[in-house]
Image 1 (tube, one colour):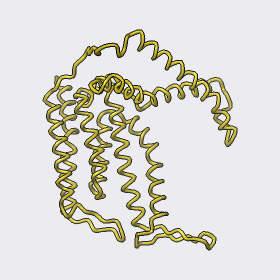
Image 2: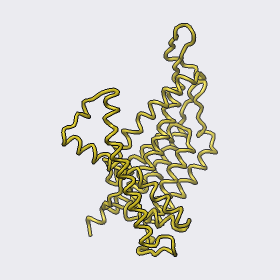
Image 3: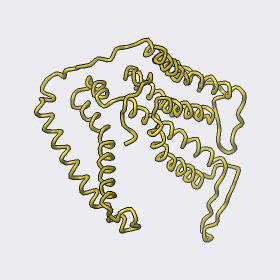
Image 4: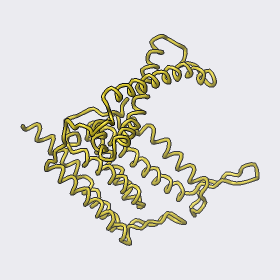
Length: 301
């Protein structure tokens, strides 16, 4: 499973999990806040470069493979069902009953919306790759042991199920079962044995988890913490950078050059918005600079 926690020698894995969580939430907030295409593209590029700098190329490629179809789907749906744009690219008459018009403005708006979605998905992927499940349990324990347990088990559910499914399919390939070559309904039927094994394995894991929680007396008293997360200088710098990101982003939204209109015609991009996007990119790049200096310091030690 590419989207799983594996510790690596870089700043993001040595940072306080509260700081990483705040960074991810800041990214998501900015992705929802921005509407200008330059701001959205800048944020998307910085998030992806940060994921790559954390040493998770396989995880980045994995989530990108699943996110790209959603972008294409958003572009198609928006361009087909939103005819507010003035620049028509293609008009199709469907048997004389209705016509579908694809306009440039709808495609651009759908593309920007898809990039925003990809930025959010990449942010959550970074959270999954960098923060361990034990750290999540420690972060949420103040909400109550029931809520923290539900959050932790929910986040581990999909990776565990995917690992089991990949292992089952690998065993089936070694046994030379004709599952890969089947098509259509036969391929759907071939998935039934895999899903049956997956269901039985999930039920067995649920029973084992319940027995383990009961034997350890989970929830019968206050939880014991065996590790504490110390705050370092880089954590305070990153946290200050996060607040600066949010402040500059909020300030930029009240400036006239940050308003961008897609309909009925695409608005022009002025130099003020370009400079603002460049300034935002520099602020967003500070975690990358700190990570580079951390790696350099580790080599010089």
